[in-house]
Amino acid sequence: MLGASAKSNYSLFFAGLPLVITAWEPWRFELDVNYGFVENLGCFTIRKNGQWLQRASSQRQGWLIKGLVEYAFDWGVAGLFGWYASGDDGDVTNGSERLPSLAAKSRFTSFSGYGGLDWGVKKGFVEWQADYAGTWGIGCKLQDVSFLENLRQTLRIALWGGTNSPTMIKYMEACDAWNEGGIDNPYLTTYDYLLEFNLDNSLRIYDNLTLHLDLGYVVNMLDTATWQRSWMDKESLSCEKQDAWKAQLAVVYSF
Image (cartoon, rainbow, N blue to C red; front, side, top):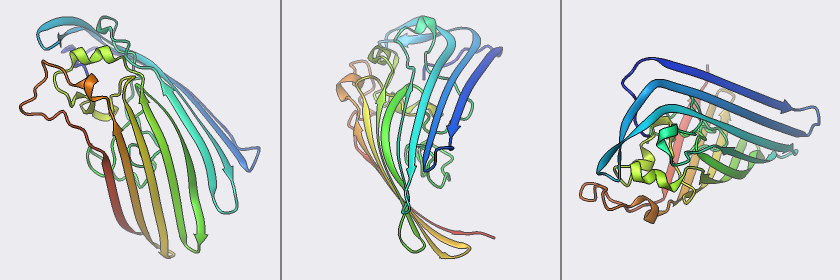
């Protein structure tokens, strides 16, 4: 989000503690704790308020905790999930406080995350490549619900929030910079929220032929007043916001 140093020497450290309990069926519990540290040795310069440069540290370290509780019924699985990740504190001289990752994929949802067919490989194609760095969230789901033969449906609802300091906006050059974090999308401040709905449907036509219809909708609750600043480019970029939606149809034949 802030740029990178031109040096090529890196230090990396990652640690994780996954815990899954399935002994108390029909209950299932998951807990996952992660920490990461990365530093591209040296510092870099960054523009502040669109006018002058400031020295910033290339260090990035952060943590993430997420959990899931499920209960299996005869007709499907009900679940509650949530997560909390550290966010930027607004001081670039001490680096970033967001969890670094190599290939993170959030799987609680199927539009902002990778809980669906997992076919999206680029931002803007099928699914966002969102991880949980700098965000918190809570949600519920009804998974693999089956009231009709050969038809399975999954409904998810999740509220996303940000843990990044709003003062970080002074280092952004455009009002759409929240969407410029690569696989770290979305970059949310503590004033920003997203409300996501997923309805994924799977119909088995034959033993090796399945029809998938995945629907998603995200209510955009980013704080426009936070992101729109006087030095940002308003001629080529609109500061208006809109909701996002998807309708994905796939026919899958397995050999």
